[in-house]
Image (cartoon, rainbow, N blue to C red; front, side):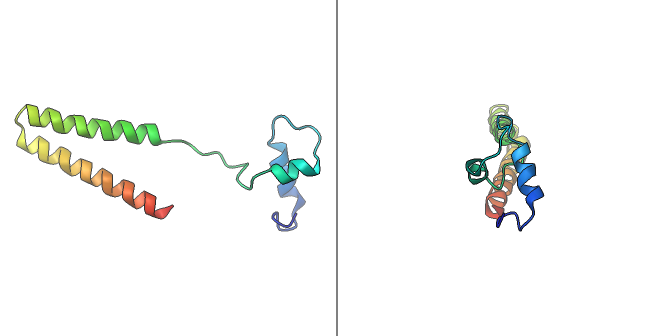
Length: 91
């Protein structure tokens, strides 16, 4: 109740999201995390696929002797790394 700012509805809502629990006990309330109701999406596989495509495009441009393609793919990779670094700093 202290963490719910005195609002019992917040605790009840978190408990209602537990699929297994039918009866609420003090142990249930102690085990509930404050982020129990937040659903996170894991986008790491998309980022790894994008990174892989950028690296592959650099090698394809290098193999086809496309200097412009190699530079553009390198710039894309560096922008991706900068974006990843900024996202890490915000966390």
